[in-house]
Image 1 (cartoon, rainbow, N blue to C red):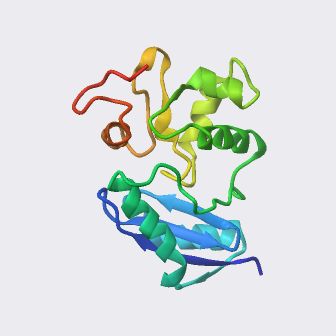
Image 2 (image 1 turned 60 degrees about the vertical axis):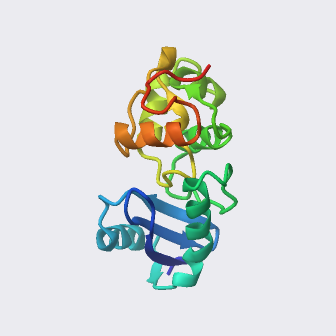
Length: 177
């Protein structure tokens, strides 16, 4: 049997997000559309994990998310576990994790940072499967020219996060450069 994973939900302004935390960190943080039960089944199979209800393991993550959405936290300290991600995706997500609060990269710049110049589309695909939304801030990756681009959590959520971080003017679509 694999590791024990604490599975539960954490409150955010977007609604309750499903979270799974194991011994190495957060394995999944998914937007409210993701069903908690099916996520638990997926993780139990994919990681041979034993799912436990341990609300205390979610406490630090919940506190950090509260502080982030209150504009008081610029960098998450809660570790992430990218065990579910392949080698290229891991490089993309690690490069994404290095983008500072209020900053951004384009998909092309991110691909280059991940060691794959010219791989903007592949980098975008890797971001689309980011298992730890918000903690690895894929919302900080924009299309060339500063357009918002896509986002697995939806364009409105991406816009909200970029406005929160000051990358976009409230109600605007123009990225700060």
